Picture 1 (cartoon, rainbow, N blue to C red):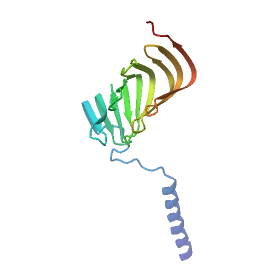
Picture 2: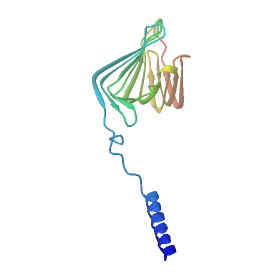
Picture 3: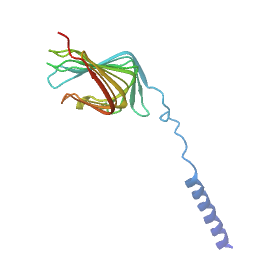
Length: 185
């Protein structure tokens, strides 16, 4: 009888253990699984300084919201400006933006417009697309969407883009069409 009772207790303990193992985890009640902003800033402005102490780039937005669950920052009407001494400024404007949790990547969506200011004998250059992934520290921008590039002489369209601002190379990836108009004297 004692063996039977010990076997029943052991069977009950194993059933309880097995039941605990197959149950889905209980949701945390600390709010960490919610996607609510922990802070919001209206008329947000940030400036990053370079090693020489001069502004390297600025980021302005109508509003900024930080989400603690994925540590991302969402921007409304962002305006990013890349500043470089002796080179023309580059401006990126869009309807929305997202900054990765490490701050290394910025994603611009909506009506994205990139403008390189005119300098020396070069006219201003404008690039438009619906999505742009920017890596500020590498001076790179990427997209897999339709792109239009225009300046005083060219009008080029294509799908997909890799822009390296350090090497001044713009690579269109597919379906490229272009028109060049020579300056009239």
